[in-house]
Length: 188
Image 1 (cartoon, rainbow, N blue to C red):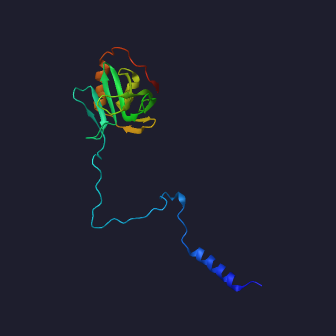
Image 2: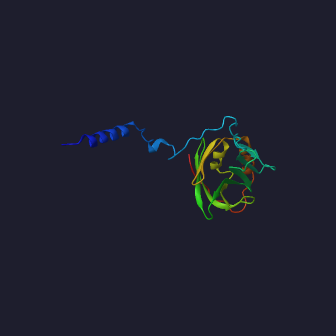
Image 3: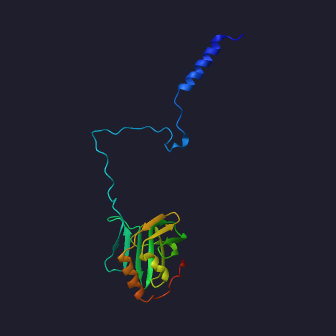
């Protein structure tokens, strides 16, 4: 014969377990053991951090280079003309000796520009840098809006600019001197 006491205790335990709130699913996106902390009503919300301006193209004095980035901050991308060669710098840290292809997708073509980790004067460490003759048809990828992707540097979406078009035109008018870099692999 079964005693009523253990059966009633078991029934109470089952009912107590059913009445508890189910744990949050692990894939809800919330951190485990997160605690919500209310903000004091007397204090205003924190302001957006300074330097949250929209990136723009800006020219350097002398007209031999342009940079793309937020005003007052370091550039994200820069183009410079050196003796008829367009030098492209993606201002993202690179490991010493690293090499990659900077994939650039413009309106007219896709260009894969070979870039190397390069010590750039005025910058700390190494940055990604590559070059191509300004007269190369692949250089027109920079004349309009383009998207660039580089391993470990993410994606950058860049609008077209008259400053860039003028730089490429001026640079292409100059004869390339010395050893010219290998032409990038371009697809149309």
